[in-house]
Image 1: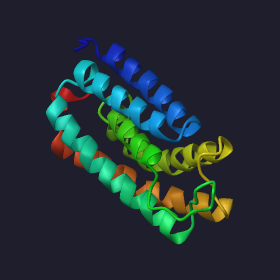
Image 2: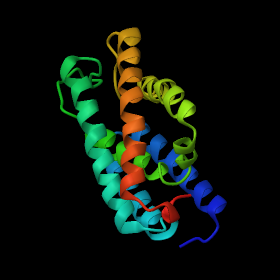
Image 3: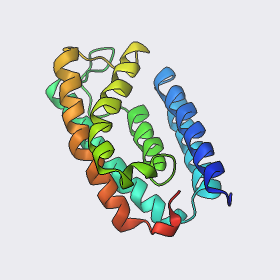
Length: 174
């Protein structure tokens, strides 16, 4: 376990960014393996409370997958080959990776309610749009899709931060 908060947060940020890129550039088994490795390193080296944080990651991943599942079912998101899916494994892996950031490199957003509501509806859709540019997913109607995703993130992100506050001890954050 790394003792310094800034170093832990930096490592968390770098691992998330690398994992995100791998997941969208190689949306298949490589993404799942990469996410599992990042999660293992995160829980073993970065996390101060691995069991509580693992439970939080699981809860948040389930909620994120439910939201993305909705987007796939209603046609906001479509797989590049046009096949209907629930949620591809690479996107589940991305949710796992994202959830690792909420107790570390993005924990500061929990202290700034205005930013917690303002940034996710912009950053969330930008991440999905970026994934479309790398060919991992398609937005058939980009404007409607990005607005829908933004509204989803407007609701989901504060909910995740609320759940984090009630599942992970404060001394385990940052």
